[in-house]
Amino acid sequence: MQYALLIYEDEALYGPGKKGPAIQTIVSRHMAFNRELGAKRVGGSGLSATSAATTIRTKGGTQSVHDGPYAESKEQLGGFYLIEARDLDEAIAIAKKVPVLQDGSIEIRPVLGPG
Amino acid sequence: MSGAALERVFRAASGRIIGALAARFRDLALAEDAFAEACARALEDWPAREVPVDTAAWLYQVAVRIALDALRRRRTHTEYESLLSAGVDAQTDPDDDLSAIPDERLRLIFICCHPAVSLDARVALTLRLVCGISTLEIARAFLVPEATMAQRLTRAKGKISQAGVPFELPASTSWPERLQAVLATIEIAYAKAHEDAAAHGPHSHFSAEMLELSGTLAQLMPREPEPAALAAMIRYAEARRPARVDEAGVMVPLSEQDPQRWRRALIDEADGYLVRAMEEDSKAIRVVQAKIHAVWCARRSLEAPPPWIQVLSLYDELLCLREDPVVRLNRLVALAEVNGVDIALSQLEGMDPELLGEFAPFHAVRADLLRRAGHDDAARAAYDEALARISSTAERLWLTQQRRMVSDAGG
Image (tube, rainbow over all chains, first blue to last red; front, side):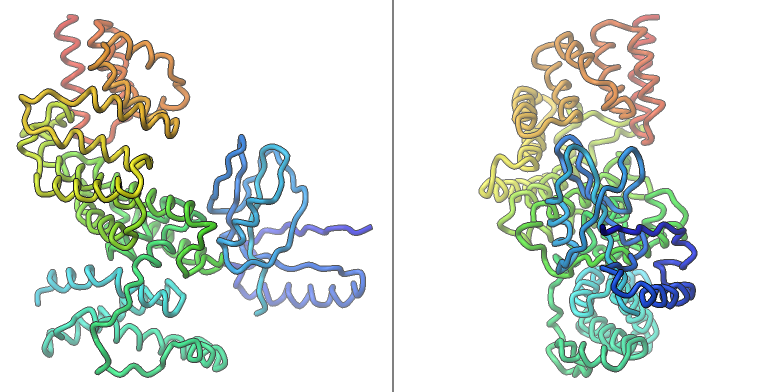
């Protein structure tokens, strides 16, 4: 079995744009954890702050682009893709093709780069 | 040069210079800061010496050096080297062709108007970076404190850089959505200027900026119908401004405005844009919208009959292209004139109040139809609903006047 571990924290702890000093602390703790996981780690990454998030909403067959993260309502997290895209426009174009059965949202968040 | 004259020079150069800097350094905040610093140096430098012949070129060259200095301080040596190899030259010879500021305004507009930035922030960012309007002025227009607006602008610039909004013109796959976002942004910015009929409000001078910006956009995208149509619409609407309010400050409805007070030169300019737009696509939504303005602006005097029949058929055409409750509402105003108040009223009562219940014009149209149909009590109640939601003084005065007509007739 493979399992996804989804990390929920108050991002304000890491300062605006997740650029505060606490980010160094947590990154080194994650690195230690990664060493401990060894081969059990399949993949993973930090995500940039929700201030960089864009959400594609599908409602009644119509898609629309919104600033900001997915606002929790009646849907639940059902999966994720990690993609390589040239820029936000390409990421949006790909996100629009992610299948949802009826209504749903796809949140786009850049992964945290090195440094 | 006086302070006010300098302000005008800076504002006029803003979009062009920030656009060129942003395209070159791929950093909106850096571009804006470097331009602001260049303006500050001009304030010190120009009064002391001679004002340069090409002020924009001077500002651009100085801003480029400021940006490069900032990068040198901020970045590691490797990053700076890679910037240099990417064509960002460190030394700019002041004797270079000073008039050659690359025109990157279109790119700047597309960056500021990206659909992943919230609409309010897009409008503010476009006014700030493309039109050079100060944060304080934008804050006044949005009725928020300056600090709040400054924060909103900073957040929007941060989003653009962190989320990876491209600094290139959009690829064909995302072109329609990106272009619609640009047009919607300019429409909202103009609506802010236009909603105040008396033109005394804090946004009134934005309209001049929107005239220019929409013209620039149409010029930069000559093969697209909707930018030309938008340029036409803004010109038609601006042309009518002198007649929108009477001497007492009361709004004058379009059909009662004296066409001789409209600015004919601006209407001619609008006609030119509309012809161009129609050559590209006469069935695009904004092209049909512009035709409605054109039909009104073709009226030469109050003696000439209002063009209700043409207006009605254009609204029908528009509804075939896209269902829109506001278009439907406007259509009913024309329908009442062509086919009678009762038919219009029955169609209005059939509309979903959920869609337009908070929209002041919905209640104003409903009140007018009820009054003309002789339903006095219902009309008075509808006027009250409209008055509770209206923000412009000129329209409030007009609605109050209309409501009084019911009281007079009904007792």
